[in-house]
Length: 231
Image (cartoon, rainbow, N blue to C red; front, side, top):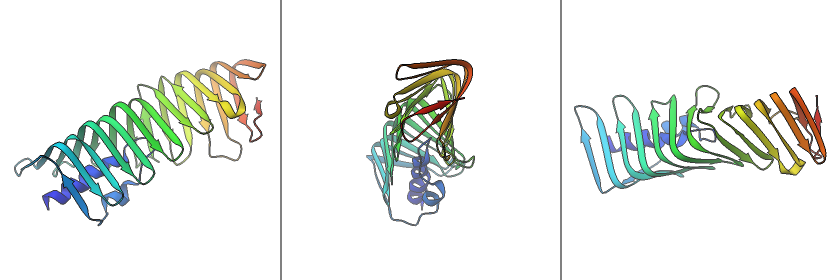
């Protein structure tokens, strides 16, 4: 029973950041689980389970591995640290430390790289809030890269289900397929609408080919044919 709680609790950490698996399916899964580690201890008084050295947990198509893992059966808080690697379905994650606070908050810290479908996030830290429309927050900044281009800023957040991303401070966007580059103090990027567009504010600028546009606020519509229209 303790082992199953450890598996289910820590495997939920796979849901961490901008590019994550569904928490509910991992939490309620009846798929066979497997744990390997050099040592495993359980404190019945505190409810703390600790696995150390060569830790690897597997469930269905998912796994998470690291040097050390803990899970508290009473508080539902868990951590994996030390060369963390995680995978489930089309999500891949690597970081130095992974933390879960119940099922509402997941945090990856240190050299974070998360890949989900065609999107990749890199940065020092990312927080994920599954109940808030798959909200991700990179308060220390980072970069999101996809087939259509790259977004970066001193502070990044996004709502994965909406395809909406906000960058604040040194906001920068590049789109090689459109030969476009732009930036400003803030950007709002909407990717899952009929006409994808980005709103640039504060010292906003856009370069495309030999054309340059500058304004305090610009809306740039990103057409499929490679052209960009500013307003």
